[in-house]
Amino acid sequence: MHRLIERSKTGERNREIFAAIEGGESVESVAIRYGLKPASVSTIIRTEKHLRAVCPFPAYRALRGEDA
Image 1 (cartoon, rainbow, N blue to C red):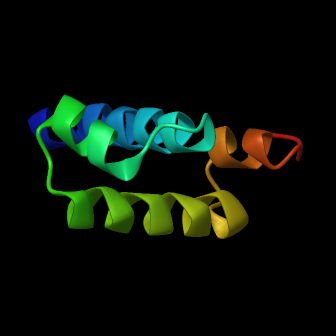
Image 2 (tube, rainbow, N blue to C red):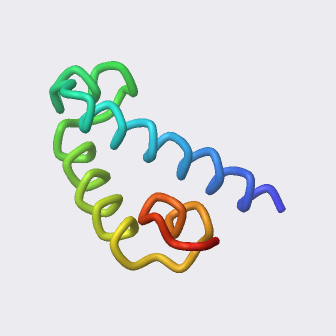
């Protein structure tokens, strides 16, 4: 159960990072704020784009405007 909680927090963080980038914040400033390397932030952005396009989970389906 502990791993599920960690994943949930990480997923939430990744969605926050993606939202910050969508809002116009730079990769470098997001990396500093979250204590990550810019390359890690870029990987998170790429992964979130993919998840938003294909993930069947309700949260991502809602982002695509599909019924959850």
